[in-house]
Length: 198
Image 1 (cartoon, rainbow, N blue to C red):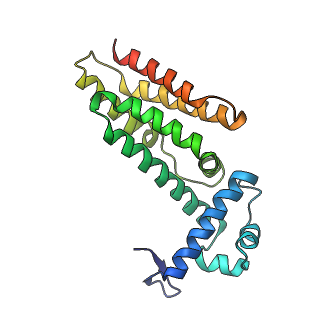
Image 2 (cartoon, helix red, strand yellow; image 1 turned 180 degrees about the horizontal axis):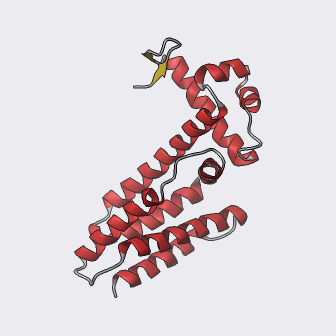
Image 3 (cartoon, helix red, strand yellow; image 1 turned 30 degrees about the vertical axis):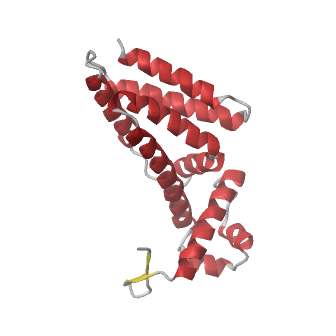
C-alpha cells in the first residue's frame, strides 16, 4: 500500500492518480539521471518532461534527493527481483553462477538502471554498506561449496572479487555498447566455478 505523509504528519493512502504520477516521475528521473547525470537533472527538468509544474513535482516528492532515492529504490527492486528469481530457480551448487549471469544480464538489458544506480550511489547519497553488496553472494558461495562437498572457501573474498568483476564488466558495457557481456559473464562464472572446485 503506497502512502504519503500529509502536512499534519499523518499518513494517508495514495490515490490511483497519485500512484500513477509518482511512477511517471520516477521513470522520468531514471531517464534523465541516466542521460544527464545527477548534476544535470533538476526538479525543473523533471517537471518539464512530465508536463507539470515544479510545484506539482514537489507535491509528490519534497526534494530532488527524495525523488532520486525513490528512483534508485525502484531500479534496485527490479534488479534484486530478477536476480533473486534466477537464484531461486537454480540449485545450491549453481546459485553463484545464476547470480553472476542474471546480475550482468539485467544490467546489460537495462543500461539506464545501471547509470541510475551508479549516479545515486556516487551523488545522491544512497546508502551503500559494502557488506550489503558482497554478503548475499558470499552466502550463495558458501551454500555452493557445501553442496559440492568441496574444501573450505573464503566466501567473503571470493564474493568481493566476483562483485568487482561484475562492476568492471558492466562499466565496460556502458563505455562500449558492443562489448559482449554474455561472454564476459560466462568467463567470470567459469573462474568462480574453478575457485569453488579447488
